[in-house]
Image (cartoon, rainbow, N blue to C red; front, side, top):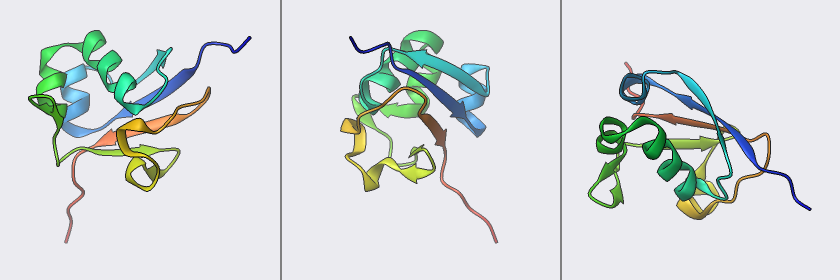
Length: 95
């Protein structure tokens, strides 16, 4: 029997402000899409508005799985395993 998947999620900038925490643990999410749904269910509409434009993930949302962009994997369909670390942050700018 497979145990429950527990993923640590680190939130930055506007996502941290919307959730009111900088880190949380989500259990039972099979992939990035279900993880985002669980985060919205846990933290509410303010976080949903920061993450999504309607049903579509905003272009300004960057998601890393264990330090690598989920776009290098399978995007929102990227599978999660126990102990993974997901970071969600806005575009990085600098100068």
